[in-house]
Image (tube, rainbow, N blue to C red; front, top):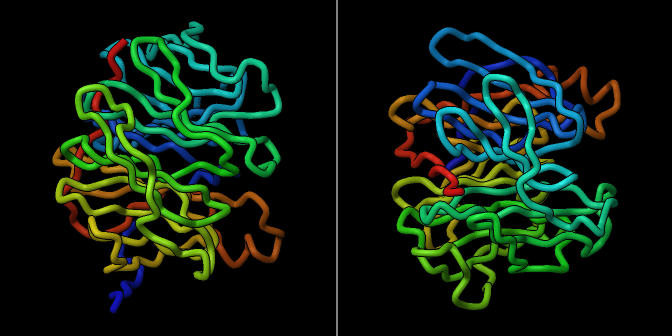
Length: 295
């Protein structure tokens, strides 16, 4: 039986993003980064001081990977770019679906090998328009295709298992991965089939014990799954559209969750004043920070 917990967390940032996504944490600077995809914004929050900045972007972006103290790699609708942290200057790094201007980047996460998985989708969520790519040293390789809304990209702590979903189908897929390269070495299998449940599987992160924390879009829950696919806990959040979790804090024992107000009418937004905020879930967890991307 799944344990259900009421929201015991707090609001880390009440700036309402239309589509908050792609949270990640830099332990060297104690900073949380996330995107407002539709608003073309990169948000920055220093945890210790609460200092908040919003960086305007020239295009929609959704995934950020640490590179070093000066640079980040971001995935955008126009490909991958290196971002200078101090100046915000963007330098083109690699093309992803340059022949598909109707698509944009969506989900992604860095593997322990220093490679990156990035997903794409149609800007109108067109059926099977998206894919997932492996990026290493600037080389881009398509690994899965014909996906509509690819999400939930995360990896087991030892890097031997990759997870992903198509939110439209709401099945969490499991695939064996080479821990040295981050490339799949087998065929994906369905680990969790939640098609009959309200909402859909969105972004996920894997903790140090191999448990998967999933933001369930349209349900107002963040779910925790065991490594064998059993949903063991549900955590309510004060927004019906949680999108992605990330481990934060110097010990990696806190869990942040982005949310969205995209698609909500005025009545729905008035009932969910925290929709679009960056939330902290509440439970103490044993997390794993996203690795640095190796250029």
